Length: 207
Image 1 (cartoon, rainbow, N blue to C red):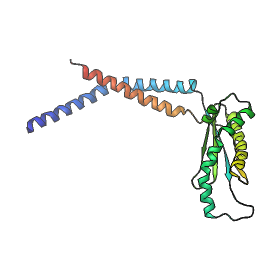
Image 2: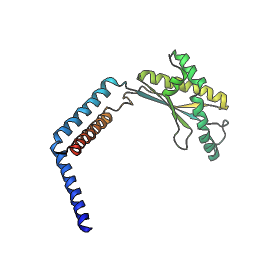
Image 3: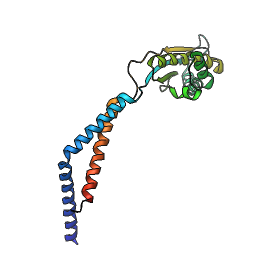
Image 4: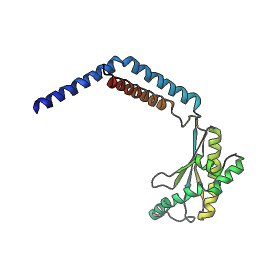
């Protein structure tokens, strides 16, 4: 029983060592394929993938009477209401108004796909981010959405004022795709793929 166990262990060690030798023997091939796939991913990302740019504008909403003090309960309530505000910002009323006002050839669904609204924890600040292939258009759309949404929020929620915390600026760097990330992933996938091919050929070789 013990002899069989020792023999099986020896066979496993021999197999692992042989596999390592096979990989070392094919190291040049593995590295070459990894570099080629990484280069392909780099060229594909750089030349064929349309870059996207993001521009963000921020608004601050405070529902209070003039000269009245703001309590902690007001802050908590305002934080909960920011979810409602986010829905209003991405509403059909607001986005279609922006599309028509800017003369964009976009449907409501297409426009909504470009817009995201986030809220920092325990704040009444809403960040409106627009993604587009044109950095100037991303900035213009973000500011237009902020203006239209501010009016809509005040009318629907009976808010006294929606203040501009930050206007959208023209993005100088693309948000996606990441050339470095895609190149790295391509290289890693290429290496794993060729290793799998080498091992399959080794395991199927009966000679």
